[in-house]
Every structure is written in C-alpha cells, then in structure tokens.
Length: 366
Ligand code: NAD
Ligand code: IPM
Ligand code: MN
Image (cartoon, rainbow, N blue to C red; front, side, top):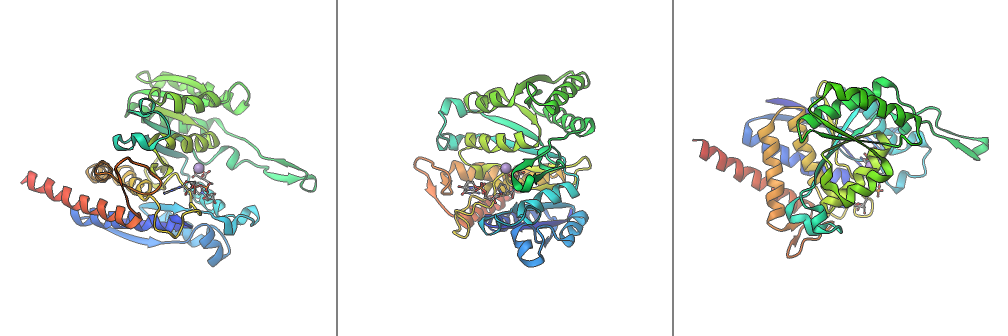
C-alpha cells in the first residue's frame, strides 16, 4: 500500500515523539511491504517563529492533500503571552476545523503491567477499557462572540451547537458502541445548560436507530467522579468538546500516565489526524525522557482508521503491551521492579519487537 503522511511535530515533546512514530512506521512499511512517504510541516509555536502564524496556509494545503496526518503537540511558555489569534493552540484548533475533524476518539485502556502505576486502587483500575468520543470542532472552543469587553473588565465566551453538529457526533458514538460492548453513556450538564438539553434530546431520539445499544445519561460532575471510582461501568462516553477535553485527561489516570493516551480526530470519509492526548510537556521537553507510547499508539489508530491496516495496527499495540510486560517504562510511569528508559530506547524496543513478531508470524504462515 502507498500512502502519503503529513507530519506536524509542533512544539516541545511533540517533535520528540513524532520521531518515534516515524521509526515505527518505517518498520511497519518494511515488514509489510508498504510505501509510506512523509512530509513535515510547521504548526503551533514553531510556525509562529518561522511564519508569523500558528497555522501557515501551506500546512493546511499539505494536510488537505495527505492520506493521513500525525501531530505531536503544540504550545509552550515561550508563546503563552501572545494575543489569542497567535497562540500555538489556535493552530491546532484551526487545522481540526479546516479539515472538519468533528469526531475525536480517545481510547483509554488499562494495561495489566501498569495497574500499580495508577494512584488509584488496583481493584478500581483493573479491566478499565473505555472510549471517549469527544465533539471536536464546536462548543466553547469555537463560539462567537468570544471576546473581552468594557476595556477588558468583562468577557464573553459562547457555547453554541446546532442539531446537525450534535447529531453527527452522537451517530458516530452509537456506531462506535456497536463495534464495542454496546453501551453508550452520554455526558452533559442538562440540569443547567440549554446546549446540553438539546444534546440529551438528540441522544434520546437517536436511540431508536440503534436498538442494540444501551444508553445512559450522566451529568458531567457525576461522570468525573464515576470515571475514577467505577471506570468499569463505562464502554463508550460521548460528550461535547470541553467536557471531553477535561474528562480525557482525568481518564488518563486509569492508565498511569497522560503519556499513554492516543487519539484519532476523524471526519466521515476516514481522513484523519492522529495525535496523543497530551500536550507539549514543557517541563520535560528536550530531555529525551518523554513517553512516546501515546504517539505510537496514535499511529496504530491511523493504520486502522485511515488505511484499514488492522494487522499492522494490532502488531504495534501488541508490541507496546509486550514492552510494558517486560517491565520497561519511561519516567512518567512507576512500575515496581521495572526498568526506567528514555524515549529513543523505548522506541527502539518497540521497533525491534515489530520486526521480530512479524518475522515470527511469517514463519508460522509458511
Ligand atoms: P501537558 O499534557 O503538556 O503536560 C501535563 C503533564 O503531563 C506534565 O507534567 C508533563 O510532563 C506530563 N506529560 C505529558 N505528556 C507526557 C509524555 N508523553 N511523557 C511524559 N510525561 C508527559 O499539559 P500542560 O503542561 O498543561 O500544557 C503544556 C502545553 O501543551 C500548553 O501550551 C498546552 O496548551 C499545550 N497542549 C497541547 C496539546 C496538543 O497539542 N494536543 C494538548 C494539551 C496541551
Ligand atoms: C487537547 C488539547 C487542546 C484541546 C488544546 C491544546 C487546544 O488540550 O487536544 O486535548 O483543548 O483540544
Ligand atoms: Mn486536552
């Protein structure tokens, strides 16, 4: 298979973990006879420094031509005091919007070896396996007006959703639930917000189209509590943009680290941008100690969702599991009797396993 992939390293550890993704994809291409071509483009603070804008036109144009996009992370203290239209985060929001990537899938899976890496009790975390389906291009992040008023003495942010925007993400979540354990939890704040009332109405209406999916509604405050006291009750969670952002960082605690959570940002036709849930981690950037697994697992999601390469995606996921099972971990994770390693060593171990496991597989297939 021939595919063209645009890489958007971005800032901080974003650039470090993108290197890991590239190495993993080279190994996959070699083992499975695919041809992946790469093109790197600027986004975020790096793009502000070189182009004067967090999202240069040529970055958007390259992404529009790509078969899929991998993004590291954007942002950092260097750019924090810029006016909001120049902030690195605007580049990320802009590319999501420009490509109409309305559905952000954030799988959260507890690995057996990482049970003790979570501050939560083992019996709470054990077996957690859920998917957060986050609406990505609406709500508070994109509402207008969003501005300061009265010479900066008051502010307004707007939370707006149309029926169509809610319906498309709810449909995506129902379909995701059909591919998993047929249980959908819709999270909102319908006791207060009009947007949430419409959200809940639409979920109730849509139930009839998916009779094989069991539906619950939870208010977001209670959902935040249940996510870390009884995560096993969740299969698919669907929620609006801001709630999904917050709940997914919270859910990362189940896995032991934010450095473990991958994501896929998709639209209907399968074009996707794949990015770890974490940010640019300025506190550890440049030290070679970032956990590359969220990024590597995001490349597996790319192979699965954009290229339908299930065996290749599965092989990456198996390699991640195996490296963890062997006790290797980056500094963000604490594993009793484990061996602490850096980003490039972790990447090399995954690449090695991909090569040896695919070799074993082809011997077995002969
Ligand atoms: P962050 O996710 O960058 O970091 C939070 C904490 O988790 C830090 O202590 C960090 O060291 C740790 N961490 C995150 N990823 C890790 C990894 N892969 N390996 C090891 N440790 C990891 O969040 P923040 O500090 O609140 O934000 C920093 C910058 O990143 C901000 O500018 C923010 O806007 C931006 N950000 C970008 C994205 C994105 O590009 N998708 C996502 C979140 C935050
Ligand atoms: C994420 C990030 C972004 C978001 C920021 C950097 C704009 O936190 O991808 O989760 O809130 O969507
Ligand atoms: Mn976030």
